[in-house]
Image (cartoon, rainbow, N blue to C red; front, side, top):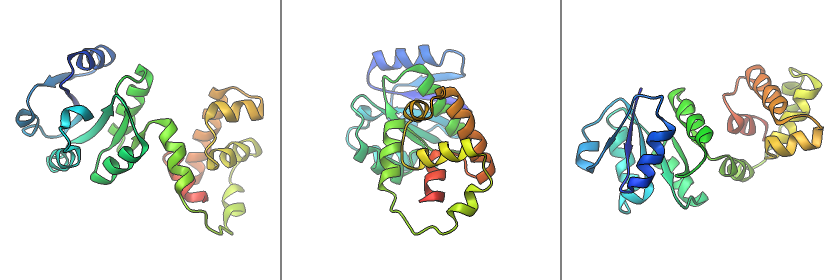
Length: 196
């Protein structure tokens, strides 16, 4: 899937192009030119949307594009609004390269990507239900996977879980990935929805 960059900020475009130098990537200068694109992953600078990010996202999605919106000053309420409008991801325009790659890869895999801090906030907003099947679901996991899953459900970060369980964040991620497979969910948000 080709990556198209759209921003009114030349410094952001340069940064994104540098980060994505190993990808098939190009930039577009005009909104009308952007509307002619189809079947691509479009990385869109929120500030370049001139107050109509929702409309732009809907129009781009209608042409089988996936849209990642990056914002210099990301806000949780904006994230929720844009995800409802059909954005496939939302994050900080200047986030580190590994986050940009994570977002691109998740979106290519037909998943939604959200800046980790916002994912935790979104999980906390999911109402809890009386889930009598929780123990039955957790029986599929090893005891360490269960420990990790229960902390993930409560919106702890990998780093916080690693500290609590005295293991590395990489080990936490490995346990989480195994649990996702066993519980048939794609990501942390899917896990939270399954277990809330």
